[in-house]
Image (tube, rainbow, N blue to C red):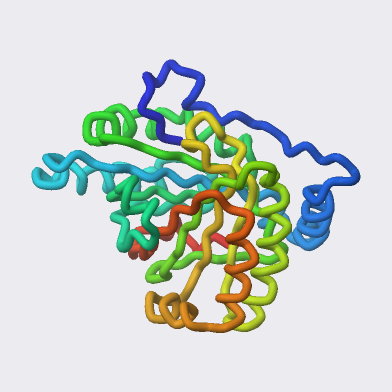
Length: 268
């Protein structure tokens, strides 16, 4: 994962914090349901989502350095063993005031079968070289969020798909596990209505996440399909129930390019 600190810092290695699964907690109920649904397929045993938002320097965009950065990051698809999927590219649309204020211009989204795979990716020489040679010199700011997918079904990603990313902070007194549980119930309704595929979960990398405790990606066949859900009554109702738990949410959209497919759609 990408970090603006010196690469000798322990921040470039993920904090592999487990969720506190108290038997009475809502987290346990969600985790148990997700684990049961995923147990039949090794491909979705413990999928990890890794998101990095990058705000590039204006001069980097003008000179082509940002394009070179994207190429270097995308090349990791053939250089780092075990990557289920990786996409690097520009942000298409900042879809919330918080996203506009933060101003990310580019994004990296990768998927890993398990936390050790994410840790191996972070320290792989090709990844370190891409960070040192292209990200650090050209980034004004980065934000990184990692989560274990708690959705009960797969959310494959393929070239040309539109993806909506949502990062959220909980209101005071609200536990991230409560958001996970609410999203699990809400997306079940929305998915049944619109065929939406999602991945969501509680962040386990707080040091790099700027306070964001929850992440979700919703995958659509196209931008037209993404835009079509905006007026759907069931989707709007589902969102309303979740917003009451949130202090802040960052929303942005991107499209997976042809090179975003690291050999096959990621069935995670």
